Image (tube, rainbow, N blue to C red; front, top):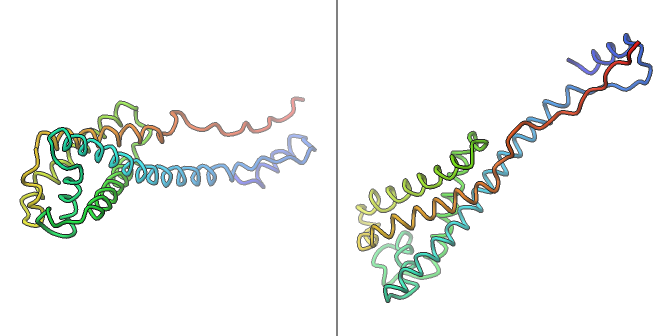
Length: 197
């Protein structure tokens, strides 16, 4: 219904206030809000992935320290993704950077995959995070580790890596919940009613 049509209806009802309702603007604004919401969701996924990557790094550092190894060992292993094996000659800061960029990218992909489903329940998103962490583990440490370039990952503790990837997915899912839209549709302003005669 156009604004002009509404104006004519208002004129016929005897309303001389000159006020018109601009219904035609509402769908555009709602579409724009949805678009901004989806973009914000995906950007939040990027940040969530980065933060989940920090949690993953902390867990790995703890595990290596408890095992008596050097805290920076896992960064050298990750650096081989860029520098190639062996891990002993890899640069630590490259490993940190690669790990955080990959984690942020994984968060971005997670949010993009779930963007159409972001209004689902909190439990659903939490399970999606866990399943995503498990899928990342399977790809990273079961499929890609057989590629010679990824051979540094052959010596990793698979049970711990599986658990760490599940923690990554759980943290990612939990952080994504913070950006979850509230349930229910936004209310449109009530249109003025015609005066009673």
